[in-house]
Image 1: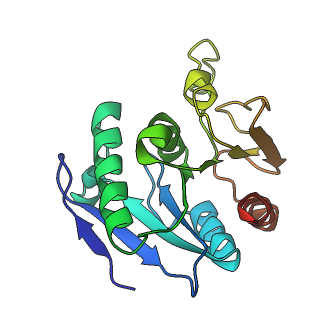
Image 2: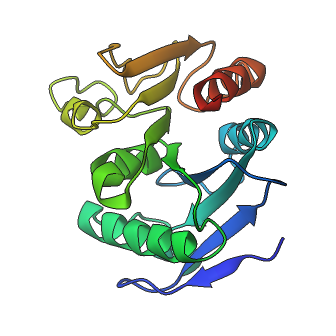
Length: 197
Protein backbone atom coordinates (compact mmCIF):
# COMPACT_ATOMS: atom_id res chain seq x y z
CA UNK A 1 0.00 0.00 0.00
CA UNK A 2 1.60 3.23 -1.20
CA UNK A 3 0.42 6.46 0.39
CA UNK A 4 -1.25 8.84 -2.06
CA UNK A 5 -0.22 12.51 -1.95
CA UNK A 6 -3.21 14.80 -2.57
CA UNK A 7 -3.01 18.52 -3.28
CA UNK A 8 -5.43 20.59 -1.22
CA UNK A 9 -5.94 24.36 -0.82
CA UNK A 10 -3.83 24.15 2.37
CA UNK A 11 -0.92 22.00 1.24
CA UNK A 12 -0.57 18.31 0.48
CA UNK A 13 -2.65 15.74 2.35
CA UNK A 14 -1.79 12.04 2.37
CA UNK A 15 -4.15 9.08 2.02
CA UNK A 16 -3.41 5.48 2.98
CA UNK A 17 -5.76 3.31 0.94
CA UNK A 18 -6.57 -0.22 2.12
CA UNK A 19 -8.33 -1.77 -0.88
CA UNK A 20 -10.95 -4.49 -0.40
CA UNK A 21 -11.41 -7.14 -3.08
CA UNK A 22 -14.77 -6.59 -4.82
CA UNK A 23 -15.45 -3.62 -2.55
CA UNK A 24 -19.10 -2.72 -2.02
CA UNK A 25 -18.40 0.61 -0.33
CA UNK A 26 -15.72 3.11 0.65
CA UNK A 27 -14.92 4.54 4.08
CA UNK A 28 -12.75 7.64 4.43
CA UNK A 29 -11.43 8.26 7.95
CA UNK A 30 -9.65 11.23 9.49
CA UNK A 31 -7.38 11.34 12.54
CA UNK A 32 -7.63 13.24 15.82
CA UNK A 33 -6.09 16.67 16.39
CA UNK A 34 -2.89 15.45 18.03
CA UNK A 35 -2.75 11.86 16.82
CA UNK A 36 -2.27 10.11 13.52
CA UNK A 37 -3.84 7.43 11.38
CA UNK A 38 -2.18 4.65 13.41
CA UNK A 39 -4.39 5.28 16.48
CA UNK A 40 -5.65 1.92 17.80
CA UNK A 41 -9.34 2.75 17.22
CA UNK A 42 -8.70 3.81 13.61
CA UNK A 43 -6.71 0.62 12.99
CA UNK A 44 -9.53 -1.50 14.48
CA UNK A 45 -12.19 0.36 12.47
CA UNK A 46 -10.14 -0.04 9.27
CA UNK A 47 -9.87 -3.80 9.81
CA UNK A 48 -13.58 -4.12 10.62
CA UNK A 49 -14.59 -2.10 7.56
CA UNK A 50 -12.37 -4.26 5.37
CA UNK A 51 -14.08 -7.35 6.75
CA UNK A 52 -17.42 -5.71 5.85
CA UNK A 53 -16.25 -5.33 2.23
CA UNK A 54 -15.20 -1.68 2.35
CA UNK A 55 -12.12 -0.07 0.85
CA UNK A 56 -10.77 2.29 3.53
CA UNK A 57 -8.79 5.48 3.01
CA UNK A 58 -7.08 6.99 6.06
CA UNK A 59 -6.45 10.68 5.39
CA UNK A 60 -3.67 12.70 7.01
CA UNK A 61 -4.43 16.41 7.12
CA UNK A 62 -1.87 18.83 5.56
CA UNK A 63 -0.71 20.16 8.96
CA UNK A 64 0.13 16.58 9.98
CA UNK A 65 1.93 15.85 6.68
CA UNK A 66 3.94 19.06 7.18
CA UNK A 67 5.01 17.85 10.64
CA UNK A 68 3.16 20.51 12.63
CA UNK A 69 1.80 19.54 16.04
CA UNK A 70 -1.13 21.93 16.35
CA UNK A 71 -4.22 21.37 14.25
CA UNK A 72 -5.26 23.83 11.57
CA UNK A 73 -8.44 25.94 12.04
CA UNK A 74 -11.74 24.19 11.26
CA UNK A 75 -12.33 25.88 7.86
CA UNK A 76 -8.88 24.72 6.66
CA UNK A 77 -9.44 21.18 7.96
CA UNK A 78 -12.82 21.01 6.19
CA UNK A 79 -11.50 22.38 2.87
CA UNK A 80 -8.51 20.02 2.86
CA UNK A 81 -10.76 17.07 3.77
CA UNK A 82 -13.21 17.81 0.96
CA UNK A 83 -10.34 18.13 -1.55
CA UNK A 84 -8.98 14.76 -0.39
CA UNK A 85 -12.40 13.06 -0.59
CA UNK A 86 -13.00 14.49 -4.07
CA UNK A 87 -9.59 13.23 -5.24
CA UNK A 88 -10.21 9.75 -3.80
CA UNK A 89 -13.70 9.55 -5.32
CA UNK A 90 -12.19 10.29 -8.73
CA UNK A 91 -9.57 7.56 -8.23
CA UNK A 92 -9.41 4.49 -5.96
CA UNK A 93 -12.91 5.00 -4.52
CA UNK A 94 -14.64 5.75 -7.82
CA UNK A 95 -18.21 4.46 -8.08
CA UNK A 96 -18.40 3.19 -4.50
CA UNK A 97 -21.06 4.28 -1.98
CA UNK A 98 -19.27 6.58 0.45
CA UNK A 99 -19.10 6.60 4.24
CA UNK A 100 -17.02 9.26 6.01
CA UNK A 101 -15.76 9.43 9.56
CA UNK A 102 -12.86 9.80 11.91
CA UNK A 103 -11.75 9.97 15.51
CA UNK A 104 -12.27 13.06 17.70
CA UNK A 105 -11.39 16.12 15.58
CA UNK A 106 -11.65 13.94 12.45
CA UNK A 107 -15.18 12.97 13.45
CA UNK A 108 -16.11 16.65 13.75
CA UNK A 109 -14.73 17.31 10.25
CA UNK A 110 -16.69 14.35 8.83
CA UNK A 111 -19.91 15.65 10.43
CA UNK A 112 -19.47 19.23 9.23
CA UNK A 113 -18.71 18.14 5.65
CA UNK A 114 -20.95 15.06 5.31
CA UNK A 115 -23.40 16.69 2.90
CA UNK A 116 -20.75 18.40 0.77
CA UNK A 117 -18.75 15.16 0.57
CA UNK A 118 -21.78 13.12 -0.49
CA UNK A 119 -21.46 10.75 2.45
CA UNK A 120 -24.25 8.18 2.82
CA UNK A 121 -23.32 7.49 6.47
CA UNK A 122 -20.95 8.90 9.09
CA UNK A 123 -18.80 7.02 11.62
CA UNK A 124 -17.67 8.97 14.70
CA UNK A 125 -15.04 7.51 17.01
CA UNK A 126 -14.74 9.44 20.31
CA UNK A 127 -16.74 12.48 19.19
CA UNK A 128 -15.62 15.38 21.44
CA UNK A 129 -19.01 16.68 22.61
CA UNK A 130 -17.35 19.44 24.65
CA UNK A 131 -13.88 20.32 25.98
CA UNK A 132 -13.11 18.47 29.24
CA UNK A 133 -14.85 20.17 32.15
CA UNK A 134 -16.63 22.65 29.86
CA UNK A 135 -20.06 21.15 29.07
CA UNK A 136 -21.38 24.62 28.23
CA UNK A 137 -19.05 24.66 25.16
CA UNK A 138 -21.08 22.00 23.37
CA UNK A 139 -20.29 20.89 19.81
CA UNK A 140 -23.42 18.76 19.59
CA UNK A 141 -24.83 20.90 16.78
CA UNK A 142 -22.16 19.45 14.46
CA UNK A 143 -23.44 15.96 15.21
CA UNK A 144 -27.09 17.02 15.10
CA UNK A 145 -26.54 18.62 11.68
CA UNK A 146 -25.80 15.30 9.94
CA UNK A 147 -28.76 14.16 7.80
CA UNK A 148 -27.58 10.58 7.11
CA UNK A 149 -27.21 7.60 9.50
CA UNK A 150 -24.53 8.15 12.16
CA UNK A 151 -22.74 5.71 14.45
CA UNK A 152 -20.89 7.14 17.45
CA UNK A 153 -18.56 4.82 19.38
CA UNK A 154 -17.72 6.55 22.67
CA UNK A 155 -15.71 5.62 25.76
CA UNK A 156 -17.92 5.33 28.85
CA UNK A 157 -15.60 7.61 30.83
CA UNK A 158 -14.68 10.01 28.02
CA UNK A 159 -13.93 13.45 29.58
CA UNK A 160 -15.16 15.01 26.33
CA UNK A 161 -18.71 13.85 27.13
CA UNK A 162 -21.25 11.30 25.89
CA UNK A 163 -23.54 12.31 23.03
CA UNK A 164 -27.19 11.29 23.33
CA UNK A 165 -28.76 8.94 20.80
CA UNK A 166 -31.09 10.65 18.34
CA UNK A 167 -33.19 9.71 15.29
CA UNK A 168 -30.74 8.31 12.75
CA UNK A 169 -27.91 8.31 15.31
CA UNK A 170 -26.79 5.26 17.29
CA UNK A 171 -24.41 5.68 20.21
CA UNK A 172 -22.40 2.66 21.37
CA UNK A 173 -20.64 3.10 24.72
CA UNK A 174 -17.55 0.95 25.22
CA UNK A 175 -15.25 0.61 28.26
CA UNK A 176 -12.55 3.27 28.46
CA UNK A 177 -11.95 6.94 27.82
CA UNK A 178 -11.25 9.21 24.82
CA UNK A 179 -8.52 6.88 23.53
CA UNK A 180 -11.08 4.10 22.88
CA UNK A 181 -8.51 1.41 23.66
CA UNK A 182 -10.64 -0.32 26.34
CA UNK A 183 -12.53 -2.75 24.09
CA UNK A 184 -11.40 -2.66 20.47
CA UNK A 185 -13.37 -5.85 19.73
CA UNK A 186 -16.63 -4.12 20.74
CA UNK A 187 -15.67 -1.12 18.61
CA UNK A 188 -14.96 -3.35 15.62
CA UNK A 189 -18.25 -5.23 16.06
CA UNK A 190 -20.21 -1.95 16.11
CA UNK A 191 -18.44 -0.75 12.95
CA UNK A 192 -19.09 -4.04 11.11
CA UNK A 193 -22.78 -3.92 12.05
CA UNK A 194 -23.07 -0.26 10.97
CA UNK A 195 -21.54 -0.98 7.56
CA UNK A 196 -23.41 -4.24 6.96
CA UNK A 197 -25.74 -4.21 3.95
